[in-house]
Length: 251
Ligand code: PGA
Image (cartoon, rainbow, N blue to C red; front, top):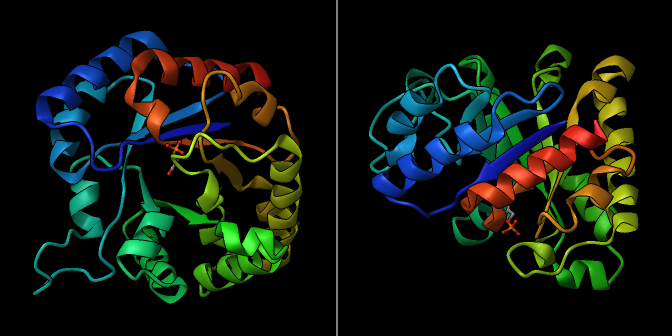
């Protein structure tokens, strides 16, 4: 199980320090669950100095696909490693929707992340219109195939997938446990096809989209649900710790 918090564009330095300290004391070191938080870039260094030595890992929310250069406003994989990141979220639907991030860009970023020993958390998920047209399986399949294009089997062993239906993100509307299990099973079979049995089964598939303390247990109990990518509820230490506890019980 892996529970990762995506803070998005929230919390300045002081607030990030406060939440991180609260998480370290309330979460401790879970036995069976990996925990990560993904703060904004400017909070990473300070966050890591609080997390260091705790049971919580750190990730970034995005990165650029190049090593360095004239890319004003961007941050590289090696910069993220240098401040202590273990993970990087790639292809979140907000990046796809507002910043034009395509599957091809996500795949180049995933390959670059691996070159710098960052574990990508690659996000996929259909829109409401696509779900209403019953096209979710085809849409997600294309995203998975194209976003992971070029990754080798050994890179697949250091990879996390996150299924986040766009209509469930930040809306308070969660996909039903049946919908989640069905999509995760579909994604699992694709991962097995792409990376083989051993690696395909070892990849954690997270669900994201309005996961809260009240619904985490029923989602984590489903097969092929290996944890969650948490947005809104990751901004509250008590809520996030409670979701981690649900994962620990389901593991
Ligand atoms: P949410 O966000 O939990 O606020 O719906 C999830 C995400 O976007 O990763």
